[in-house]
Length: 376
Image (cartoon, rainbow, N blue to C red; front, side, top):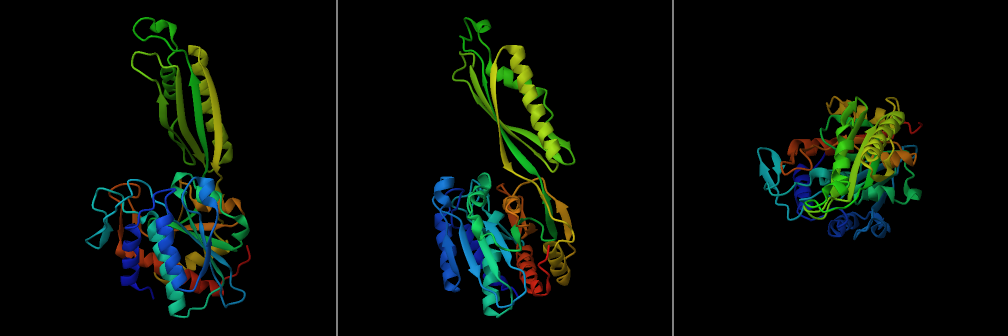
């Protein structure tokens, strides 16, 4: 059984340790100390330099004594979004919240706390299991950077579970592909009060293009967004340059390509109309995955959930996670929830009951894995 008091205490300790993206070293030190205290071997990779941060990903390996059981990967990311410094957690009506000036950091320190607690319970209660690989990733919130630079030779598990979800009954088995878009528009500068007609306003050109675009929810599988526009130097100068950044996502790669092509065409038409130039760059961020309902990783999760009276709700998501990167490496992973709610906002919270249930679900998955086939 999960030690509720210890789990909550651990979670609260974790969220008090600052770990914004690319500055996770302080929190990583805390995790290393706890793993060391359990006699679990671990190492940190060299992702720090590659992501421009102060720490790498942390790998831990727990040898199992049960032959034939699948080798399972457990993952959670250790970075948080901003404002995520000097977090002051509070207990309120069965929930843990921040003081309202910051996020809480349950995304994803709840996942980290659950994994560490489950490892502790396995050791204390001498619960049989197969080999367990743990990967705590950095810089997930800024483009899945930690997992992208993870050392693939250590991703040898049969399948895995990414603890980065919300509702504990929700099992995410499908996520989209995403392309990031950057457009540089070059117009012509001029004095805005004396000779405005001699200028080509790059911001106006960008606005004209964006006004014609299909954005937001395109269809059931596809979304698109323009997120930032930067340009201009002064109000009395017709802006010559502007940089527009956006994205497109879809579960269907053909639809994704068509949406990106549509966005490019609108910039091309607007630039042609107003006499501007543009450079359009597309960077694949991650690719879609879908776990079949009869895959062992799914069957195991459903069985473990039902055994503790959770009715699993299998859904697709519109967001990306480390699971996308693992899937591209041939390692199928489901995303399971640990109760984080209203993430990325100052209203973020987590119900203690959900945190405990999420931990119990993971523990049960590991127990049930002894009777699970690892054939795909």
